[in-house]
Length: 329
Ligand SMILES: Nc1ncnc2c1ncn2[C@@H]1O[C@H](COP(=O)(O)OP(=O)(O)OP(=O)(O)O)[C@@H](O)[C@H]1O
Ligand SMILES: [Mg+2]
Image 1 (cartoon, protein in one colour):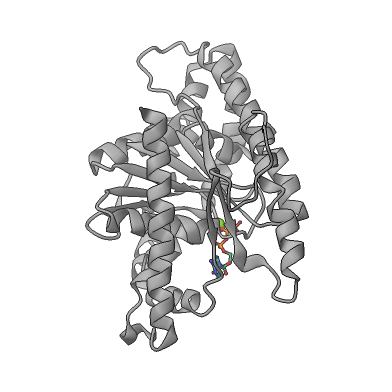
Image 2 (cartoon, rainbow, N blue to C red):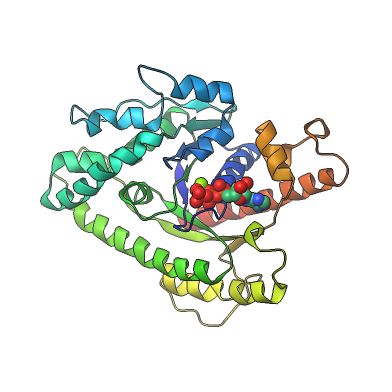
């Protein structure tokens, strides 16, 4: 199983929407996918599950079958992780449900990060808990890919999640702040990778399975829905065409030999369109936009848009898989 996190510390760019559609497209292409909601806002979980199922999960008085439940013994200092509940979304998609209370684990993760330096065994169990929960659940459902959604920040939950990811995809907008954000993201990923590599060597329990902190960047996806309709195309392109250089220098930490436009850049995985009214239709019916049918309201021109969305996500998903295969071989 390969683990892919979708991450950008800038909020509202469309990460969760992308993770949701990517998971469904993996399934369309025949892969088994474990979707993991590690954003305490749990937006991915509410996209996947019906209101009835959400009530069943979150109004359970005794224990909530979420990712938090699996790590609770560690949080309370009374044991190690336990088997997590996998929510069936379809025959090929399983979901680890998010939890609003996950944010309470932030302090423990933060404190443990420092303690790993002293070879503290409990700290290593805590820092590796997301990795171990995902690894076990992925093996149990025989997943080809684990796809992770996280919140937009550089907090301890995201650090513990990202060191557990083999790959990272960066969804982003094309504007001044996103470009600035990309630089911060690149230096933060490099810092976390280095810090974890240093800590890993202090692990006292050789039998404890630890993440290897690869966090290899696969590329970026430009989300065009954030572009203000009134903004001239030229202004958008001005920012978009600066991304290839910043991505290579700040995220891949390489030298760019010659400038490229976003269209020419192999690190640009997709320029995703604004899907307008297909999005609320998909939310309403709890389906990906590319599976909408006339009975869901996708009639007339909408049907053409649904077909074109299918191709957009198919191309993007195949590109990500090809990039992973390239790196693995
Ligand atoms: N391609 C798209 N076309 C139109 N609307 C979109 C598209 N992608 C996302 N959106 C809308 O943009 C808003 C933000 O999307 P989403 O919640 O996926 O972002 P996010 O990056 O996960 O946010 P957060 O940082 O809060 O987790 C939502 O209302 C979503 O429906
Ligand atoms: Mg989100």
